[in-house]
Image (cartoon, rainbow, N blue to C red; front, top):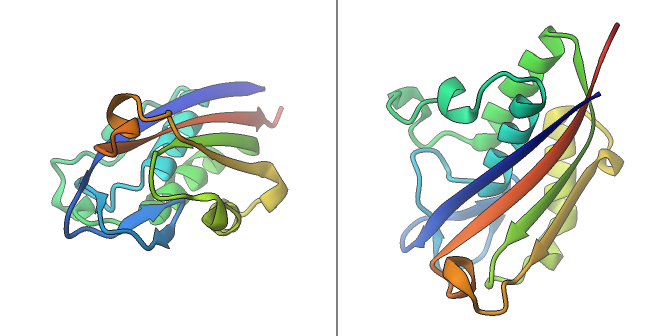
Length: 158
């Protein structure tokens, strides 16, 4: 068994769609970044890569590479999962937490779980997504940005 942790944060800005867990969320702001800035999927990829000691998403998909400008993060996740499989790893389960004061995310969590499970080719029962506010504290609490943590458990075939 191998365990990895991932963390990501992006600033909220005007004129960008808000995409979390591969799901477009209706909101007046979106996350700023080189790709679609999906903090949930970015944290998840870092957790998966960390569990396998394969670096991080900045090494796999550098923001200096124009190929990843505006990239769909779920497609990058698909590449990471295939890279893990090629090395004999299997995803057991993941647990993710989104930190955001607004918008309210509870109605979208089932869709996020389904989308992530579909991309990773695992059962939605293997994917946990939670959201919490920070009681108005810090950059997520004041609505300046959104952050996410993820933990992943991988199994390696003998």
